[in-house]
Length: 546
Ligand code: OOB
Image (cartoon, rainbow, N blue to C red; front, side, top):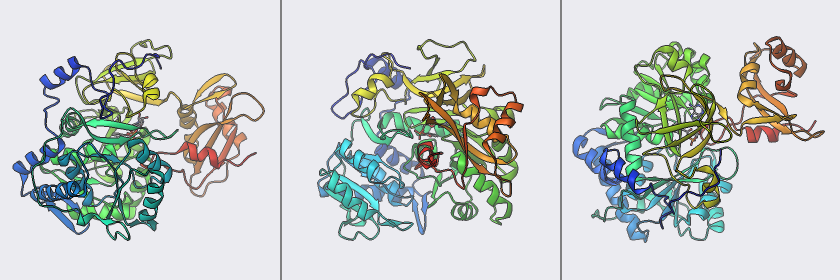
């Protein structure tokens, strides 16, 4: 949807598009925004839970007090290096103790982390470092055979503002993160109404955008999430997705667990071989996965002897969880499932503990906050009838009003009255729960008909020889529009499928002719994005030319 009117409020010098004054006053008066910076929050949590265990990462175990002190020392070290309040720092750490220490150190001295993911490479990091004019880049030394110190050389060549490369581990010719250490001292608190961090947008098309999140809105995001998900001081949260992603970071994730005095366990990866022993040893109660990873856990749990009985909730979010998998999780993993439909831009939807089994299996949850304002609109921007499908628009106390340094994008990604156009197609049940039915742009334009990729996927997936699949459009070499291509993972031991057979199968199900796949390709893996969603861009590139 687009009403081609630019957002009315101009960005601040920091790059934040602020909420209009009346919303700012309302969110503050209602207590959503409590005026505390993220650095202050850690101080307050330490005052309440100082001796409790905050972080487990490899051999390291930090209490709240130790985390607080290490953040203070690193904040002083960053300032001693010449990094100032408001400077941007590209952070690309894996799930190690250095992440929370650096995160709070930056929050304390007011520099702004640009939170990238371990799988990002020069295309993304170079772009984000230039866009943010970052002064520093923080990396691990080497992970799974990939040397980030070499990537840092490329980044510096592309982004001359990057004056410091700080390495968690062996620094080589760069600077060791452990040497960033100074005598603790108090700094002026940054403005809680201004940017605390920049998140990378999750889109799988085009270059990533940066999403400014303020101290006020992100603190609320974490606190309210912890409440919606019933976390308490006995919560042991396992971050097995990359912790720099919004989902494991604050939905409720690491920050949500801290907000109630719980413990955060950082896993080097979401592989069952890494995660299962941690669940057993640390008594993990909550964790989060993207749906493409869940079948691996379900399968591994059948033979793995690790005791997973402490696990109470598996959160599934980031892409659509099939109803079938949602219903299989409790039996396979011995825990409840919670669906999370969220976005780095803000809005979060959760299924709740009190929701019945069907609601949890079929819906992607309902908004976290009573003041999340949602509209569901048609292509012309008009509200659809209740229960109908349309694009989700949203504004509220933790949803952005503008991307960072992106006036052209902002001109069509927001309505003139500040709603963010999510690009997600949803319908709403009378209970307020949402069902995500696809992306506005994830449709295939075939002979003038617009075909929903998700609908094709649901039909193809019901074939007994298809384990999982992804549908996408490819340019029609003989015509104007696109053809429908489906890549599928075959069920183990099944015979190869011909496209004619899948077309016959869909016709028997009563599917209209214009929705039938034109090409079918068997694959041994579905490529994933940096956070683990199916990457259709890469799939489309892998289709052999016919
Ligand atoms: C999460 O955040 P992002 O920014 O990586 O991606 C957001 C997009 C949404 O706009 C939607 O298209 C898709 O990912 N998505 C889902 C979904 N959750 C996210 N699509 C269908 N079903 C779901 N449950 O992915 C994210 C952020 C916070 C919490 C959880 C996920």
